[in-house]
Length: 280
Image 1 (cartoon, rainbow, N blue to C red):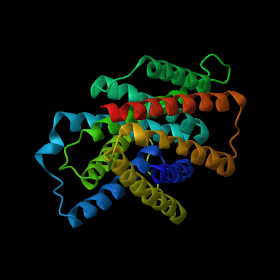
Image 2 (spheres, rainbow, N blue to C red):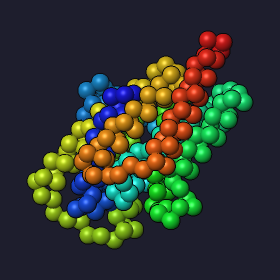
Image 3 (cartoon, rainbow, N blue to C red):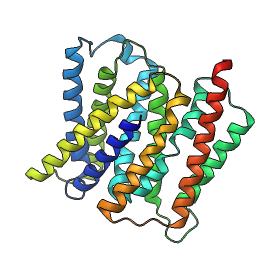
Image 4 (cartoon, one colour):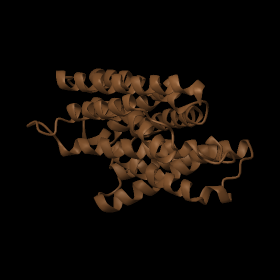
């Protein structure tokens, strides 16, 4: 999970840079095409069939919808808002995962955990500052993207064993192509010819993204969700560091306070779940 979070932050940095010069829809489509080709090759090497009945089950189709919204809205957040802000909002994902595990996977949640979840969501509001003069509606892009990733991760947990991480990766990146095409049609911007440096950045983002996706799928399908999700918070360290160093982003007191509240709440939720684990 830690390796996945580091690689995702590197992917974000390259994508944020290249989307300043290349339309978001075009970047998403190229990124998705490259990823699906890589995962198709990986699936072929282990002789995992890409087209099988389990791919088209209800849960997997819903997972694809979550993947669509997660990928599209988060890359829009990365492109249009500060990377540090988008990364900070993404840290609420473990709280939503815990909530989703209760609703959809019927995992038990006690009163203390419920309180921690609500406190964590308060931390997200502190980061967003909806009543402040500098609030940007664009910040909600990261919220929608986060919810998309949460749904994807929960449904990854219940994916049929026959669907290996290579197969899931193939369909995950295929969804990105569809998301990119839909946004390109809506955005209406013409595609541009890529310069060599832009191709290098997209390739570097793709390499980091494929590794990150593979590591994430392995983490979410091994052991307990409660045990692995707290390590998502390492992405905050990677993402904010890159945002400050590479993009000269500024951190203020409300953002730091909100991050602290979200992280503390999320770690408490993880700790509570781990305490209950032996008794289950």
